[in-house]
Length: 125
Image (cartoon, rainbow, N blue to C red; front, side):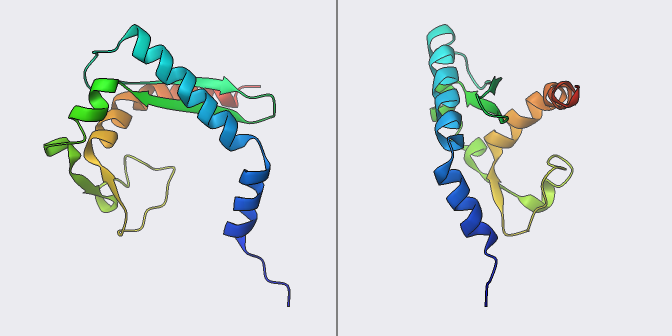
């Protein structure tokens, strides 16, 4: 019997492609830019669209170096149940067993309008 295993096939595709390498390179490039230009900017996030040599577009997200340390501790380090995030993350189906970092949710929400416009721009021919 030939059984289809989506996760295994997807894993093999990702490992065999340059997608992970291109994504990591985009994240590192953006992180270096942010670290050099805004090393002490508190609680902020930025993103940049990278068009890889393939037909894949990578959107890299990086939060400020200060945010990485300060906001993962204390109240913003709390986890938020996915039940409360359904409206925020409409593009994603959630199971109630998932939780997300509160600071990450706040950072995403701060970019929401820009990301909606980015989606519109990407969809244009």
